[in-house]
Length: 545
Image (tube, rainbow, N blue to C red):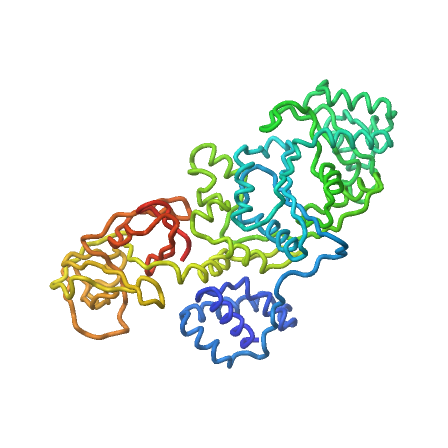
């Protein structure tokens, strides 16, 4: 078992830039050695111990061991590229995106949209953007800016949706028409029970006094709902299912409710609004949707759609459910982000703490990296946990060769060289290319405070310059020693720059003077530190390490 654990720890470490993740290794070991799950506690102790040992080796040594292939007990399975075929494809595939406009799209919900786009492109089909702007609960407010931010984010991700955007707030007359048809079949009724009673009766499987009202009485009350005679919370339209259904949540569910809040597009024109399953049951049929992709938390809504389709005698739409993608190290909350943006604590919807697509673009995360990251998990009902470093790893592959290198000193401490070895130091501007940057050198040099504290009175290498014995007054040495610590530096001609970090903090420091030439949108790497994207002259956004 030790050999199998060691193998998977090494492979994981190489994949993620030298740092293995214990959680990602557990499943792979169990899949190869099913008997190992008999003692998970013992297995995790072994994995954690091995991770500590392998991480200390460093990336280069890890790669060397992997290249020798001596630890592999059997070849790794080749991963299937792409996603499984859609079921029951007959004719043109039509799918839909259905974001609720409570804010822009973020890294967590991007997967569903990317997968939809992938399938439509595979089958040469049509992708419809349906803005699900029915008024929801008081806690789930519609953000006016989202009407612009959502399509903007989709286009940035290279998702090709139909030019005609569908807004549910425009379709209330259609929903009312179909609600009336259901009422006239006797399959729906207007219920005036207090919410507490409604919930109690549903739990007990007990019919309320309104359930057996005549169609005529239901129609009258329905029109009273539309005209605004009822206040919010006083009445709902319910669908008759089966009050003895094994699942209490399926018993006579609510189709419409009164809402008196103002809508950003249609104001107070409409007094009653449909719930998700009703609006989509109607739209998915009328828009000709052939396949639906949605989270498994909406399985109940799927069953309700089928029930409504059966009332109208409509063909069922193929529906695929997926588990949640949980990204470790990322806190996603549209409601919290909405509060912080409105309060001014966040700089806007492109603040890095929102994790919106706009914020990722501002940081320099490329859409190609996000697409590859999201598609790599396929479609599964299981919840997938993945570290954010996996996205950064995909992005790093794309930006490493195009990111100019510069020195940046965050907490500068001045040292004095006893002599100036050269007036201009030459350093590579881009990896693997014969392009160099010129760094002016003087007796006054600035280094990181941590580097100075950690290496005081020791010999270090000032990168691309010379060796020094590091003190306030540092002696330049001529020794050729490759094993000494390497530190970055800037001269007294350095310029001040600002960098907004992923936690919203802004740090300042000194950078090489040539960084003034970097243009907005350009990617750079602060050597030994991290990648960053130029937002405007001398101001940057942190990308990742």
